[in-house]
Length: 277
Image 1 (cartoon, helix red, strand yellow):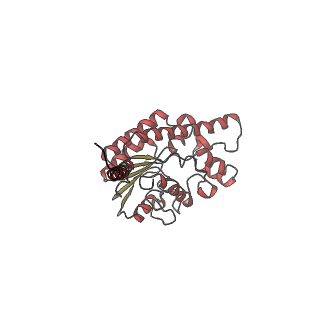
Image 2 (cartoon, one colour; image 1 turned 90 degrees about the vertical axis):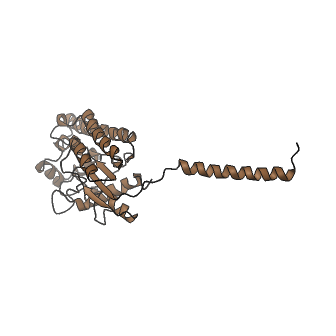
Image 3 (cartoon, helix red, strand yellow; image 1 turned 180 degrees about the vertical axis):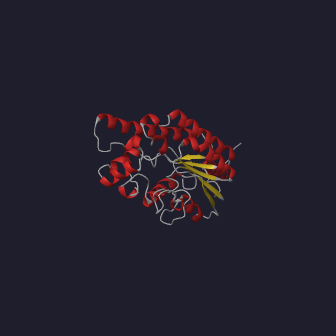
């Protein structure tokens, strides 16, 4: 049967339109939509997330936290979510001096609070011990983090995992400062890394490198575990590779993030979250 030219053209036009619509539908289905804005948020971790050394108190200053803080200059994850329209209740469940051993308990607490978005930054204290021998093994660290992630994933929460800062960078920034060396010694800050800070002896250089190598291993664990956990985003080593400056470090202990450092962490990590990427 012969088909008229007009009929063929009409069919071709209809087919092109169908292909265009199908392509649009496929594109829409393949895109990953951002989850709903959370109503409750929890922060897990240690003194970094508590905002330690960022205010007159020597310990907790949670209003300055990169995660759940309310200080305007920090522009925390919580502040950014509220700016996006979230009516948000926050819980800062991080605890000063915590190691990864505390993370499963913090995760259970966050689930009990009904947290729909949970941030994690943990591991510095696992490496910052009195001696290199006292550092948490990578295997134990992995078990602790896996247990916490399993608990959070079972609740359906959106999870954000931040990498651990480069501790050797923190040492390099202030090792020439007399004030910093005095603070490190008097406060016994991270002695596995910061003991004998002016020494260039091979044993001391090797010790510092061992500490940083362990941190690198922890970050690899975080990337792997988050990658196979539902609703989990890892920061892609955004913090680990960020070239912190002296302005980012508190002059109280010359090791924790300053107020500016908390703002830096928030700014560097936010683009990696479920609502920004």
